[in-house]
Length: 478
Image (tube, rainbow, N blue to C red):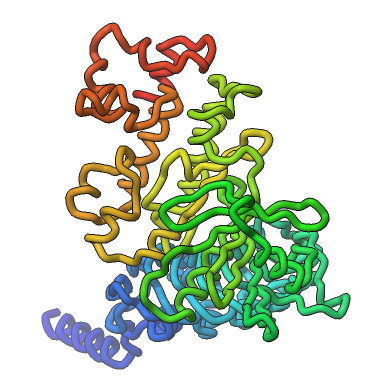
């Protein structure tokens, strides 16, 4: 009996040695390692992807199907990945979902993605991808969700296969795209270039004009002529970064032109590249940067013109004479401004920190819809020097205490400034109103002296109309 047991044990040992070892990585794992080698993983977040593993099912961002251990989902959003999307992604043949949103991926979409027959979700939004959209995506008959927004794709969206079923929300923020899905005529079909931004040098005048939106129905000569005719009578405002003019075209359309009074040291190429990024950002609550013009004597930024001007002027000067800001209007402005700021913080890659949220940087259109302006200009024109940023990139009364202390701008410092803006909407007083300053306070300090007592009714601007203190506290102050 003992001999037979030893013989059985020996047979099992021989069998174990003779079969192929299962320690080798699965084909899906090998394919993902090829992807890893193609990505520039600057933060080392993919260090858990190791060749010694039996399968990739425990790797960061990887979801498998059991028991066959095939990779079904790859979720690598917000991982600071750089570089192109490797074509080896096609080797994960069972992939159902790819989430690569909010990285720094460059290059074009590899056509090989069209070979992933089971793919149902493809999210490549908020990257730095360029080029045309490959028609092979139209072959993905199971694709139900597509998000290519906020990149730099160009040309006509292929109207083939499943691609024809997606609409504007899948492509928003790619200003060089055209085609049926976004209801934008491709200018190439009329003999004009369809790729934007459109850059044109006007040699006779030594000027360079770049437009980011392809719907300006004017020639470069028309625009530059109007720009050169601007004078003091056209000034509508000024701020930390320059003077703002109103430019009226021959068809009575108006644009705001910001003359840049200073620029950080650096090449024009870097300046123009960063402006191109700002020009690609599009949201209903952000002011559209339409283009810029480099003249021998100045750099000019061209924006949409907002008829009612800044919230600061409307709230504190004479804007309310004809249309007072009641409670509902202030709520609309607060919510719209919050959406614009949230888009900069959460939907742009890289994240854009405004650094100067204040009422004069909230512009109002004729229907009192708010538009956040001057986003990105602090970094573009001042740079990241902490000592300079503390003084220039921000307005006293709105600045967070920690920002004043160390000069480091973060999303949190923007949120603090937005909180001050909310108090300004509720009180109808500027953060550094003389009635506060005389007591050595600002609006935040003044509010703290009232909190806990029975004086909170004093907070509400009487122009808000009949709004109860409990309703206001619930919406704004708690």
